[in-house]
Every structure is written in C-alpha cells, then in structure tokens.
Image (cartoon, rainbow, N blue to C red; front, side, top):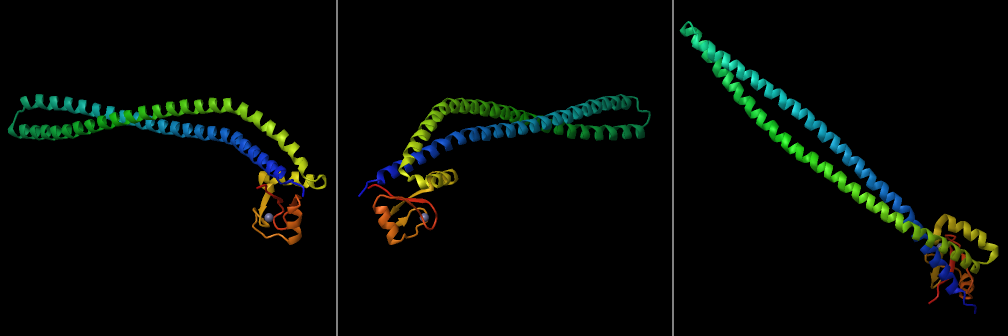
Length: 234
Ligand SMILES: [Zn+2]
C-alpha cells in the first residue's frame, strides 16, 4: 500500500502556514489603518472641545464687560444719591442701586460658574491633546514594528509558496489544475482529511469505493463539498 498520506498532510500543513502568514501580512496594514482612524476621531473631539472653550471664553468676557458697566452704573447712582434733591428722588435712586447690586451679584455668580467651566474644559482640551499624542506614538511604533516584521514574513511567504508548489506534486497531474483553482478559491480549506470515511469539511460519509481509494493512498474530490479528501497520516 503506497504511503501517500504523509505527503498530503504536509501539503495541507504548508497551505495552512501560507494562509497564516498571508493573513498576518494583510492584517498589519488594516490594524494600522484602524489606529489612524482613532487618531482622526480624537482630533475631531479636540476641535470640538477647543471650539466650545473659545465660545465659553467669549461668553465669559462678555459677562465681565457687563459687570464692569454695572459697576460704573452703580458708582453713577451713588453720586446721584449724594445730590438727591428730595426724599422721593432719594428713594428712587436707592431702589435703582438695590436692583443694580442684585443684578451685579447674579453676574458675579455667573462669571464664577463660567470660569469653573473654562477650567474644566481646559483640562479636557489638554487630555484630548495627550490622547492624540499617545495614539500617534503607539501607531508609529506599531507601524515600525510591522514594517520590520513584514520583511521576514514576505520572505517566509515566498519560501512557503515554493515548498507548497513542490508538495503539490503529490496531486495527480490530471487533477492538479482543478486542485489549484480550489486553492485559489478556498486556500487551505481546498483540502479536507478524512477519518473513518467522513469528510472533515462537510461531514458526509463517503462511498465504500472512495474509502478503498483513500486507504490505498489516493486523493479524491469529495462528492459532496468538492474538497480534496485524503487520509491523514496517524
Ligand atoms: Zn466534503
């Protein structure tokens, strides 16, 4: 009985290793892109926060100007109070002064509140800037690291391609082209080993004749899923 099993197993293993290294080569740039997307999103957050901070500061400045004019107003009323010609006039001015003092207190509270919010927002802007810087460092490091590893992986891919091509000689020449098309479509899943006459891809039981063929060290395409069935070596 020919012992072709190990050769099929080796070919399958080579195709799996090839797929694994190809996946890693594809995944690297995708992971870099995902990190760059995070940087773009973090930058958008920063722009928002800076815009909010700018308008909050403008609002706070406006309130401070209001307060200054309120204070000037108050001084003016106090001057008028000293020159009040009658009790009636005195009362009116006193009422205006009281109203101005109350309005001034409200403004002062509002300004304090604004300053508080400006402080918080300033911290948030700094945090957003730091987050971007950290992400940029991390992304650069990841990209450099991947670039370094990619050269080795490309070398490995080339070597595995050569080995897999060589190992494909175990496939009978009349079906090799069909098998290669399967590999293009399914990668290592073009092959499926069999245990107890069951295809490991589709789990369909094969015919007794197919079992005999496999046991004799042949390979054949699964009648159900079309994968190349082979008998794995023990
Ligand atoms: Zn199958």
